[in-house]
Length: 294
Picture (cartoon, rainbow, N blue to C red):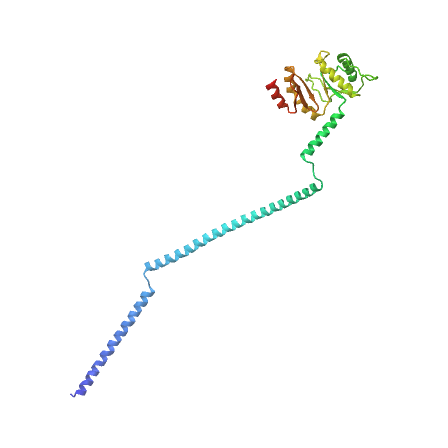
């Protein structure tokens, strides 16, 4: 056999073997690809559960954050409502303040047009009114101590007899002592009260009043029908209150037998032998002086 025929025979023998090898390799590659696809499409159950748990946790975290955000929004809404309420209340108060300020301004404007009296002016006016009232009562006297019913419906006649017989006073006028009117105070007297009501008498002449008061001071204790009778000028309530404040001073001076006088409206003058007279407008200062120096 020639060399060429041997080569051809070898070539023929080698051809089928090459096809078999290539086919086998191709099948192996296909098997590997299928295994890879199977391994990629079908995961292990543990890995799948882990991925599902992570997804659920993410969803839960998102829902929890949304819940927190909703709570914060609710708190902000409530705070906004509270602020709105406070602003409404503030606006209402501001409106009230503006109305009050406007009223005050109107009042001040009226006061500027007609200024009110000051406290000093008011006191001066009050003192002047008190003095005018006292002057209107200048001819009046108060008689304290006459028993109820002693007058027998004739108070002026009772006083005339009392003044002439007990005090020994007769008017210097030709007409004699004249009483314009006389009556008891209109205060209601309780059945259990034993204190008689005061008699107020208005005399025609002021000089008669002065004579009666002088005679009463000189006589001291005056008794009529077994009762002590006292005589006082008829002052206004304001003046009576001022003079009443010196009651304790007068009591202390009477006990010490020291001469004194209470001038109008309420001025106490103490006469101490060998010393200049002392004058007091304040009852407490007068008491301190009496207790310390007399």
